[in-house]
Amino acid sequence: MARIAGVTIPTDKQVQIALTYIYGIGPHYAANILDATKINPTTRVKDLSESELQLIRDEISANYTVEGELQRVVTGNIKRLKEIKAYRGLRHAANLPSRGQRTRTNARTRRGKKVTVGGTKKKVASKT
Image (cartoon, rainbow, N blue to C red; front, side, top):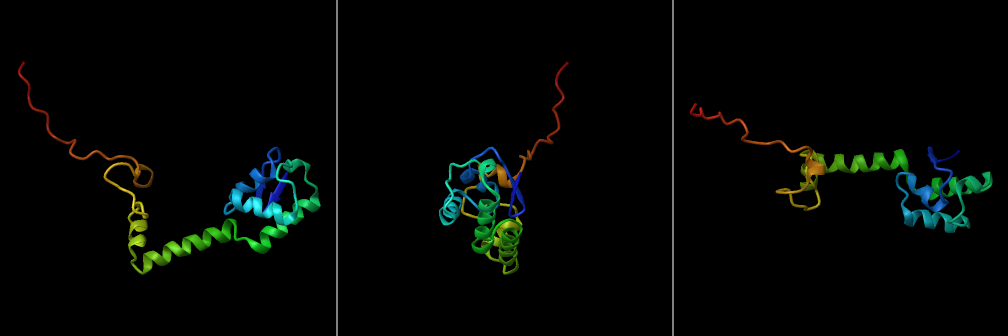
């Protein structure tokens, strides 16, 4: 069981894939980390020695902002946009897409479950 940056990464996957389980490290950064530490990207995590894991940990802590610290930075950026009443901040506050996507249709992920409007019309009495 390998823990890097406070995250337990899967042991049966290749190192280049397993590193992407850490928030803030994608495929590109994972490849850069493995290049810097001279570790073969196709090696399985369970086959890594403790010294190799320590090399990866040191590289990440020295050169990358990941996990909780990165989430704090992103949250602070969004909070700043809201405080200065920037357009993007208003979109974040209203829970709407902030990068110019259309909202007349689509945008369900951001806006949430559809709420039907106008479905309260009284039924007309029918002839019997």
